[in-house]
Length: 494
Ligand code: BGC
Picture (tube, protein in one colour):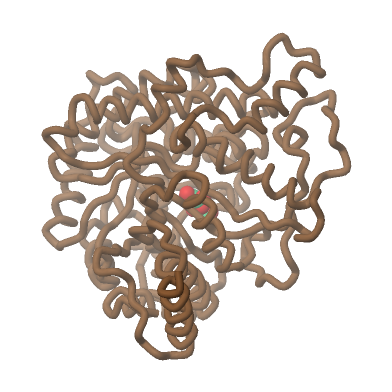
């Protein structure tokens, strides 16, 4: 007991001095650093060599008014044509791995497994091979929001058929690339995919199905993830030896007044409805949706006159099928929120996720603002979230798969706020590992370079490399944060 106390005190003292410049505290030898992007946000080449339309191609072209600057990802960072430049820049950062995603309709234009596009395979093979030749591990996200439009025409994530299509796509990816790729993320941010497409009109396919389609989408995403995991487990793991996980995004929810029991309930409920919605079915001992979500949405649905709950039900076999389907927990984290119960704690006539949740989320004025109005800077929130994961899900292996700072469009190469952001959040990661014994094994900076920020278009910059979107070659230049990150990686301390 005393020994443990003395150990904690020592680590604290070291960390405190570490912040002031004493260089004693380091990331464990096995800890890995990476940088991330996603296909639509950087590749461009939207209609070359047999590729078909994704939902993003379709919606950004058809409804440019839904994108803040009316733009699209037709060219984006032109990464499809600039593999060598991107690799040289990753080498400059000295990252251990590069997280990127596969553009589904570039590989399977008709969504049918028999219809493989040779150019799609060529492009990703070249990228993977060159990364490996340069000592950078590829980490692949299968789905970072580029659903083939032909599947969206069938109802997309709200049609259960999507599960089969996704598994076909996963099979192609494992078969074609799995001899060299050892870390797979099936799906990036289920919460964003469903809530921002079906409730908030922020992501394609921009559908209004508040409180209904949202949960159907989440349900099918969980089934699709589990099916892809089982496929890998049954047919690929023995010969390829890789790992498969799921990436969820979560802000940390702080009670508005930590002494007010209602605010504590609000923060817990917000975490249940956001993170645990997807984490509980996969990572908990019992599986299935969090009980608080189940009870509240069942109850509201019945009061609203629905014959069935708007939150679909898994059969006991499905609960078992989904539970435990991850070799690691992928975590994206950007910000924290203050939580308090909303005034209305009864069901509205028109259902919605917000009404089901019944919590108002705000930001603490003491937290620094970023260029995205909903993102403020509270690094300690990440440490608290990592501890929540440790306590709630039995300390799973965590890969931080995104964390980053939103800068304005007129940001310059001197991106001091991003440097502070990374230093603050990496300090929290270090504290979570060294003091709290959270099992965090890697960190990924979002983003490698400025890119297409979904319906914010090119109005925000998240990159460590500045991209000149006026230049036909999309010239990239390292910002100050690139050198700071490089130093952290080289020295393994902050
Ligand atoms: C997404 C990225 C996005 C980033 C910043 C994450 O939710 O995975 O694609 O660019 O947030 O908004």
